[in-house]
Image (cartoon, rainbow over all chains, first blue to last red; front, side):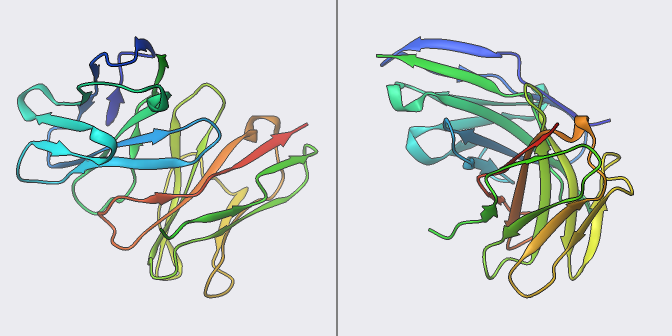
Length: 114
Length: 113
């Protein structure tokens, strides 16, 4: 069965520190990859997505992610975090073909200290 | 920016009761979804809906669940006889295309007591 792993469950950083959140998936075929963010008390918002083309994807709020097919990974990065980035981050995968469903990881709770 | 609207934001119900969770997807979207997140667990797919019928459903989406698009704007999830383990945050989502990124609603927190 397809699965998505986010290895960092809880990350604490100081402002201006660099961020990298890991995401690995298990599916050998074509995939679409997503990162969503959930700020406290709010809904899931799309940060960025990868469908094809340049494996380095830039999203909103200064986030980017790199698709490395050989490693089945889609790690999220931000060079300098802000206190306002405190949120939960979810990686999600849609496998190719007829399905539209997303398989989510367990999420990473990021706390940025001022 | 267009939003997916969900009501109510929080519902408490007694075990065995029926609940209907409501969603208003983005108006020009054609694909609709329900997901749920039990506290402390991952977001799980329940069902997708396109062209007035279910296009895909998960193992979780058993006979006690049903979805409906009763008019041109609403998309509902009905749980016929709620159980304690149905307590979760339920998210509605919609997309313009099947393979696109979704827009999620803010969720309905269902508490079954």
